[in-house]
Image (cartoon, rainbow, N blue to C red; front, side, top):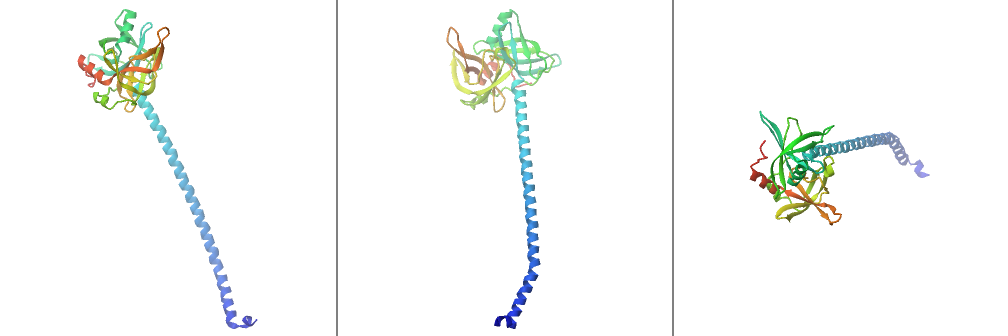
Length: 286
């Protein structure tokens, strides 16, 4: 009770009450400021999330565009150069490797397998090879080709197709040095016309790089293939370069032989270059 009558105590109480009353507005102001800052932070976080979402959308779009570009590049460089060659029952494939245009003539050169062209010519008893081009066309285009060089031992042949029509992109033949970096497990595409179907590609790897048959060197490839793939292209997946010509496929059994689709043999790039040098064709010049 004495404290209540003490002037000093009453003065202190009055001061504290006054300070509290004065401080309340400041506290409310700080609370309001805190709410404003929190709202601003929430808005900033929302904007940042929107930016991140936009970046993810842009990244996905770029990824789709890159995938589309790569797919188009493969179609142009791998599928387009390959076409079907056909006879009455024999069928195979070939690969455009050079386009030559002069004032006097316009023609394409294509690599294929000799045994395919031999079988077609024996069936027809003529000199012309029917060539069927279907890539990027609403209707198949039929042109005649003639064999201008061949080697039965290495199973390679060169076709000439005279035409002023644009047959699209020709294959990029890999340099001879590419053989030094190709080994087992190198990823490849094999492109051809199995059973006379339109051009199709299968993916796989080099299974063996040192396979020998009848004293000739081959690559064994794991890409699924069938009759009709012979003469088609083997392309390096990384660069889309032509590195081989599909030549043979293993079968098992004698009465009803079964095709072993993952045991195909391809003529390697160095053998191709050796043969082209031997016959005097330089595919590097246009």
